[in-house]
Image 1 (tube, helix red, strand yellow):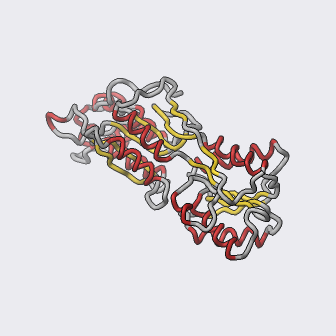
Image 2 (image 1 turned 30 degrees about the vertical axis):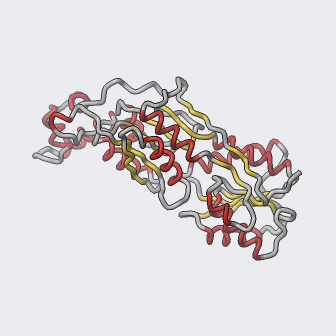
Image 3 (image 1 turned 45 degrees about the vertical axis):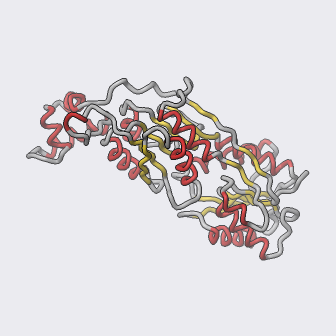
Length: 339
């Protein structure tokens, strides 16, 4: 694990010493005021960015205090996953006097840096943010914030402070185990291009790892860009089966595209799960309204939100090892053969 953060937040003096200029000069640069040379300005900004310094927007006598806000930084509000995490956070903070304030990054590291910089400048009581992969600038800001930081959804990595979530590598391995146990061998994968979707990448890595142990390799892959939708699930399923009609199982990176694929397969009269098995990930409520229940993995989203909020609010102590590991749960549904 990373070493714990220092007991105090950084100050103008820290930046001035690192940049070799006066505190007044640092203040003028960070407030974008006064006549400062380009070279000096860049020197100050580089020092602040390297240290992880964030100016304090709270004025006067309140400057040394915290506000009753919890910064919650998530990649998206457009899918069905993160609203449930937010629901868990909100429910647990209800009786604490703390209010969640949400920032959305759209899976962009640069956007995450900007959101964190702005939110930390208001000196929140704590931060809850998705994932373990962040830029050096983001990690520096969080390392030096001197407040509880809880990274959620994932525990496969090195947390800044505390991580609450599931092992996505384990979830992928366990899904592969269930598929193999059911007798499927010609397996295809449908999912997002993964440069910034680190959790989906880890699931696929665990999935392929377990298949390889059984002497099986993925027979086909189909990737897409942008958000997930039922329509994309339909189109990608049609495309992969047209190209690889011998496939007997499709593993989707999430339930939304899996649901679209299931609907398309049923419209074509494909025998599910006899000829073709299907599985998704997340166990979203959408699956309750489908003609068949899609096999999936419960990623414990509400529980993750609740546990993160309990730690930030002080209801629950952070574990010494920095990891709160929840168990991903396989849900067979109706789209995988029962053996």
